[in-house]
Amino acid sequence: MEYPRITKSALEDFSVKPNLQDYQKIYENFSWDKLAQELDWFDSEHINIAHVAIDAHLKTDRKNKKAMIWEGKKGDVEEYTFSDLSQLSNKFANVLVNKLGIQKGDRVFFFLERIPEIYIGILGALKAGGVIGPLFSAFGPDAARDRLEDSEAKVLVTSPALKKKIEDVIPELPALENIVMVQRGKEISDSNDLSYEELMAEASESFDIVKTHKEDYAIMHYTSGTTGKPKGAVHVHEAVLGHYATGKYVLDLQKEDIYWCTADPGWVTGTSYGMFGPWSNGATQAIYEGGFSAKRWYKFIEQRKITIWYTAPTAIRMLMKTGDQLPGAYNFDSLRTLYSVGEPLNPEAVVWGETIFGKAFHDNWWQTETGSIMIANYPIQDIKPGSMGRPFPGITAGIIDDSFNEMASGEEGNLALRPGWPSMFRTYWKKEEMYQSRFQNGWYITGDRAKRDNEGYFWFVGRTDDVINTAGHLVGPFEVESVLIEHPAVAEAGVIGKPDPIAMEVVKAFVSLKVGYEPTDELQLDIQKFAMKRLASAAAPREIEFVDSLPKTRSGKIMRRLLKAKELGLPLGDTSTLEDD
Ligand code: AMP
Image (cartoon, rainbow, N blue to C red; front, top):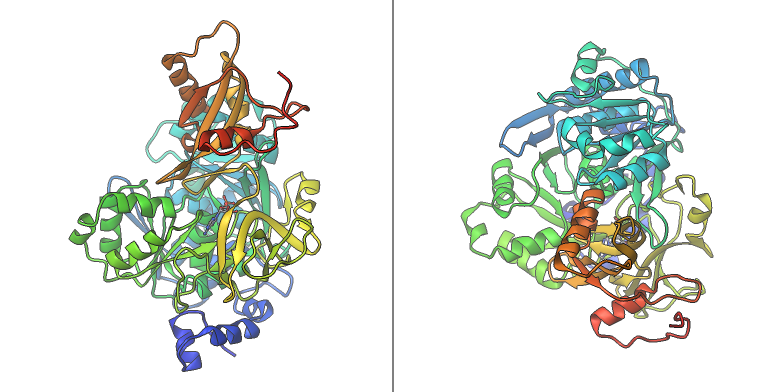
């Protein structure tokens, strides 16, 4: 049986006006096993993400269809068919296996701008059986080192400009055996580094894809927590079933679509829905290399005739800020559906989308750990502006109390999911205990607080921890504090998220100085620059406030809760564990 899609075509399947009862039918008919049969497995146990995303199409009339239309910052355009991506990724797989000795399970990391080689490289590394780890190109040396060190990456694929940023920390990475430089016309300064272009020129176009088991590790994305350094959430090859299913049912990706995901491949949205979801569904992806620019974005939609657009609330709010007149100069008739993820989408933004594009933004919720969309507003389902939507059919979501028991509709509690979906993370790299601690009483605890209404729509309330969500990027306060205290003038630092109308939150640091240092404007700027160089720009504190001392528990932990309450002018609450002065 063809499954009803939670899209326009689902309407036809049921030949009735959509209402919640129909959605119920879709939920009841859903089966991961049946959907799995739509993918090209090697056998019942073995599957490879890159094969499903790219090579499987070579057996069909999509072989010479455009898979990727890439537009550079300067307006240069490159186009790749599924067949091109297959051959190029085969070449890179050959480079990894035959030249660099990569074996199944070895980590291959990417620190690249949003250029075609990151897509080709990731596909090639997956074909080779490697575990890929993309690093956000805005990372500074400390952020890159922490992730490369923890993952013990063997190969790093980067570019001359980005390598320069992290040069100083490379000697601190003993597991790193080879650096492959994507030159694109630029010089390589270190003769130990290898040229991507030269290696690719010599490599064969045919490669026997490693027949990975569905539970073999494939993807690592680092995510921030309240304490400690970022941890690597690990996903397996079977995850592609989740990318495919949600790409089909939530994003409504059809073969004729031209789809644009604005997320960087350094974050999970940039791989799950910037590579595997759209390609496994046979859609054409348009990729714009540059960052945010309202004019360039509007032009991109018009010129590339984007049909499905997946973006984030901060970007939408930035577009809103540039006014309602600018979009009037562009034609958005090609757009069919718009989506948003990463932060709460305010109702005004949903309504604004409807006014400007004639289409509302459909909010959906998921995390690095979940690997694919878990809760969504579907194209034919009425949107309740401000709500994240309803759980994906194969997913059971619940609101649970602090003893891990389910709560009634309308009550606010911990958002939790029943474990076991294909793209669920399988561990935190080398932190199995921390992974296990996320599962309680048969639930995966997401770390978010939410409510469910009587119609099953979920509403985001906030996070249960101190993690800061700035422009959709999670920032762990500990990571920022660790960098700040490396500055020679800083004695102690406490970091919080300060509400912001565009980015939702920005990073604010409270800093106490060592004896002999004066709290001047210059010092503030110097500390900010210091942090910016080491972390990603979004993670560097936008604001620094000098304080004489920081509130701490008796065991010496900085009480960020109090710093936040002070910042917001809220009551300070229970201070009984505060340090004695
Ligand atoms: P990440 O793991 O970096 O993808 O961040 C996941 C977190 O971002 C979630 O746990 C939420 O706190 C937040 N988030 C993601 N999507 C939404 C959404 N639609 N509404 C509200 N918060 C969201």
